[in-house]
Image (cartoon, rainbow over all chains, first blue to last red):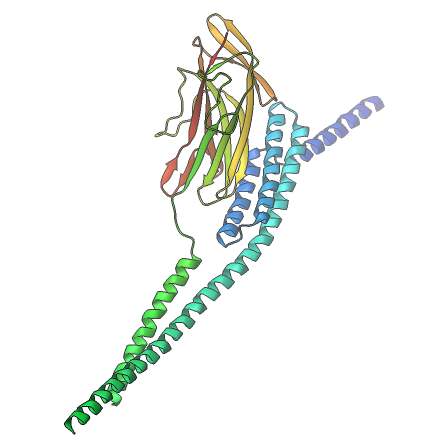
Length: 166
Length: 202
């Protein structure tokens, strides 16, 4: 009876251990599409950064991290197809960390890009207003100068006419 | 006199308004990205990174056994945004179904290797491939090739009874949760693929 109970306890503990182990594996997503979808999100951020005017090496650093993540995803995919889930998990875990790192870097750069874009827009539109005001005053000045020049010409004509009459 | 002044004031205000509109339009154009044609460019170069010397022999595309062939596949991103690009190397023969440009169906032949990379706008991706035919077998009038592709893999393919084969190189991109052949752009779906014929020297 005692031996039977012991066996039952061992089986019970084994089931708990096995389910814990499976849960550990399931803790990391083993579907490569999940990681590609995550990468796609980071790429959307990279595109926004690019369009907001930051096109330097920092973007290359982020894409290099993503490319390393892709390598790990592909390795994980290959290992998974061969049935080695534990090793696949390691690759996917590494890929996940790299994607998170790239996303953090992208977030920082996006913040900077948004500020840069706001400043650019502010400068461009305020320059437009200032330029319009300058045009306004310069047109008044030009008009006055034109009037002055016309009047002077007219006055000269009158003086010449008077001299002729005299 | 006052009437004339009012008239002038109205004219100057018109100048102010018109110039404001023009300058604001210029500011908008400067700060807004322009829409241009979006495309990928893919081409292949020979061993010297020039458009020749694709094969070991000068005048024909026959590949002797165990002779290295080096090609450079160049992919350039002009779709004005970053993209996940996937290059698929496939092997077929003269009768295999290749890419359908209108229905966007990929070539229905075995994939030898896939390479994926994120490409930034205007980035040029150079992929060097070195391959050789390691073994040729003819069983029941069918050819079986064993390839050494980029030194990593040897694969045997059953390739029909003809001696003429071709590599098909397809460009795929990641779009809305999956890889698609070609790419989506504002001008519609586009496809880019290459094929390189070769004969075996048995």
